[in-house]
Image 1 (tube, helix red, strand yellow):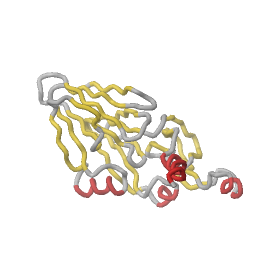
Image 2: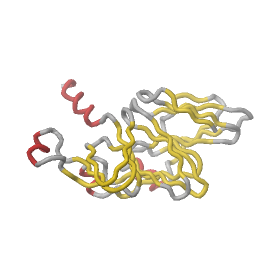
Image 3: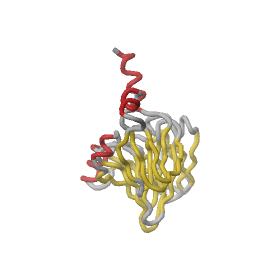
Image 4: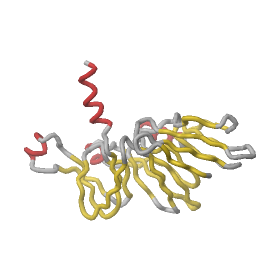
Length: 224
């Protein structure tokens, strides 16, 4: 299988060339185009309760789509996310884990499990939800793709870092999220920031350059 990310960072999409017998699983509705003789199967996005959890709490669709190449040649499917922005590929070996924001998962291949886990009330308070998505590499390893609104910035955290709510896309499992005021009470409340996410630990995080919530707040008054 060969996968190429094109159109980035603003309008990224993934061209996936499947050889005979290969397959890829993607979020429902992610297909932009596909070879007509690929086999497409819709199914629950995990077990029944896992699929419900991903839909209600993880921002993912109840169903997923698997594209399988049962022909004798190479066939292509092109995948895209709902919002304009960058897409990243992550390769996971056995036991490796990456946490993601709601709705970030786009597709995966190989031995990678996408599941929802309890994130805690701190995560909900800072806008990341009670449940977070986790991509976990299995024994045979695999790859997955996730997307963001806008570009994606990788940051190495050594101690603490403030991230405004709605901008944290992904982070390594060992990183902890806390609630914080970026300045004094007056500056935080009246400077437009309020409470933010404080990321604590030593590891990597990935931040998107735009916020859907900020876009919605900017657009709503214009439709009144």
